[in-house]
Image 1 (cartoon, rainbow over the protein chains, first blue to last red):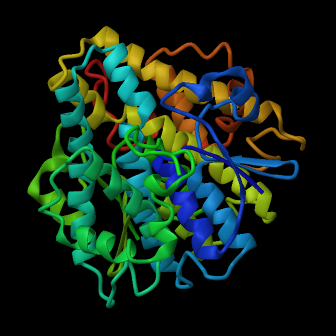
Image 2 (cartoon, each protein chain N blue to C red):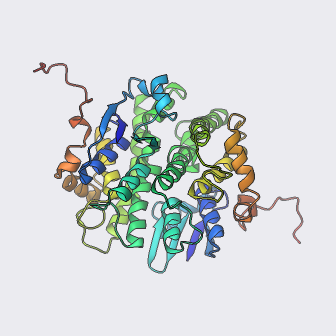
Image 3 (cartoon, one colour):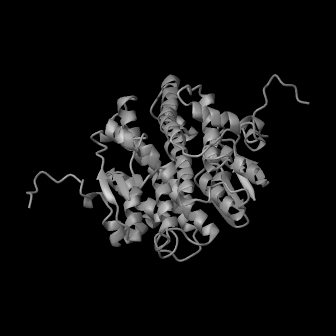
Length: 220
Length: 220
């Protein structure tokens, strides 16, 4: 399997966590989003939507991080990333979608570019936009988490699910933009706990081969 | 089961199609989004995220249209809304998510309100924004559809799936905002075909009990 990705893409971050949890190794191909590589003809020929991650397995190609992760979960079921119980599974999916549909798309690079380039929104207003949607989504999510009826160190239960796979990259984004998370102690606690696991820790942007090296660090 | 919804919400439109396809009847409660009813304490107590649709079944409550529809598909499997084959199922989910993650959230009412109220974006620029994200998403989707390897009158095959359930309301939105769809003949063809089915036709906004009656129509 081949995965097209970018260190900072939080949708790619999700997929890296899922692959790590399942102990799967993909051939990794890096597309430099901030440099506009995704809009070049080479990558458009791979994925016409010009987004990452993109998954290729033989003659089968697939976009959309959640669809890819559920496909991996069905084809490599151990460990499961969704609960067995239909209601619990639905709840986990709803958390994943709260993040993947209601927060992340609004703060995606292409949207921030549109705000700046087309609507002439300045950096301060762009950061307010960014944190606004995180705040709206996390406020609802924190309430959902408070209402859980089972003991949980992750979003639901004691093992990571698709919900955590979406939440942890979203918290990393919130931290990068310095959005206040004081009102969301449950979310912050899940993030802190998950990042102690190698599957999450090793998937973060700063641990990826395409993460830019600081100029002051001598090559060794 | 109870469904909180609004005639114009395209996420609610998706759920109405799914219920119709499965022959399920829910108790329907209408939340007037354009009037701001979703932000009032009454509805916040039901769904803290203040969005529709919202699904309640006994003591189980669920947000997110795709999570709700997959839950219904698992608990009421006939007719299936996802193919049996893992790759086909993943592809259908990726089409659904292209719409539900990459188009629809950017054009949601709360986002259009933020553009107008916080960023002082005028109506013309708002419509450009609206059609821009539809155009980006549909261009990629049209290519995906052109690449299909099986005979299809719907997004994949001869029966409606989760992909069509997402696509048809998105085309309705595009038409409402008069976005040009000439470049997307496959999408337009699927929409035309699907709307001949009662499950889709009866789910459209204008057929809902909370659709505003024209003032000129005498009550009968």
